Length: 513
Image (cartoon, rainbow, N blue to C red):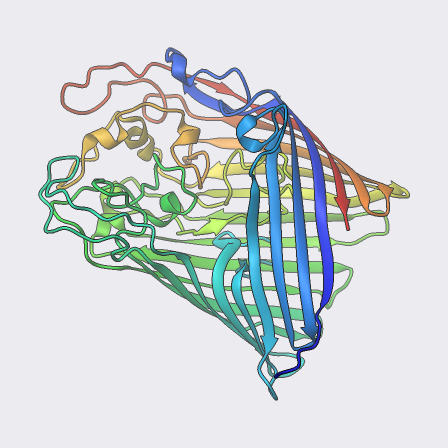
């Protein structure tokens, strides 16, 4: 009978009570009642109260073996029955966020982590990858060769066994299929990556590369003619609109895997302390056997900051390629997977708020935009109280001609492409749930943000985050303005649009232990 050492259990977690008041930026057609908003971004009330609990339990057998399970309860909107926040509570809302084991191969320095875990590609400027930063099932191997060089490799499987199969001979559009496909047929998404973090005196550099294979049924429902997600809209899934270039229809199912490739080099220089220089340079693309389904582009950012006794002022710049004026050649925007990390450039326009405040008004990534920003962080003149002030200017890098396809004023055309995919004039902010508001080179936004954190107790923080976004979208007929919907038997007038700025004030009480 084998003898086992009793593991030591360690617990940590976080409670958040959050209160929001504000209004979301809207870009809607005036004369359509379904598009009008009475609350925040047409998805919530002006005022909302929420809470979230995260609990992590580590079972540590030794320095060479441990297991971790991480639960999340919430986000719970106060008063909402489906969240367990209505009278009587008792909501079934406990989620398994992470569950993995860590072990070291005997007589080696090879560390292994297996299971549901958080994986983030490197980012030194935003501190959050614009490609992948989320929880995913994976195996990660890491070996430290010396004090300067480490090699990390991982295999991740974000999607598999979700396709429910297909049996109808014809799809919803009447196109004949080449055959029937069983449940779970060719619906896996697999990622393979290598990272080489190198650290020297005052310099850190991490080159990395990732290869992906995406099954043709990974994001498709049965009897559905949506062969691929659409970078310009219609899907709420965080991965689908980011991966695929546009929506097309074919006579048969596509039996070919798409190939994804991402690479980058990121780093920082601190040898001139207190001055810090950081950069991120990334490329990401998805390639198919049809050009219109391809998507690929670049993203780069640069940050310089100087640490003083009273705070750290900094300036930063970013640029990401955008779509050209031809949807038939695919998208020129960088392909992203799921960027849910805390983007330190922006707490409101981006998804930088570390708690459960409203965020991501302009998008969860910086893809399809360029911008410049300045901040002064960790300003403190009173013990226990610190502030961070941000000002960001956003500009679009997408061709204005694409707005005509999105609003339906212009037919996409071409074999296998249906004009009616764009005919519904919806709020532009809904057209790409993951990449956010679609900004052309004629559009821009200006964000002001102030975050204040006060330590009530050693483990209890009171945080107030206030932000305002001024939005300028071109409403001429050549961009987002009125016009006739393109396509057969479509004679509806789009009319003009109503643009409103976005603002929000969040107060959060955070207990960490």
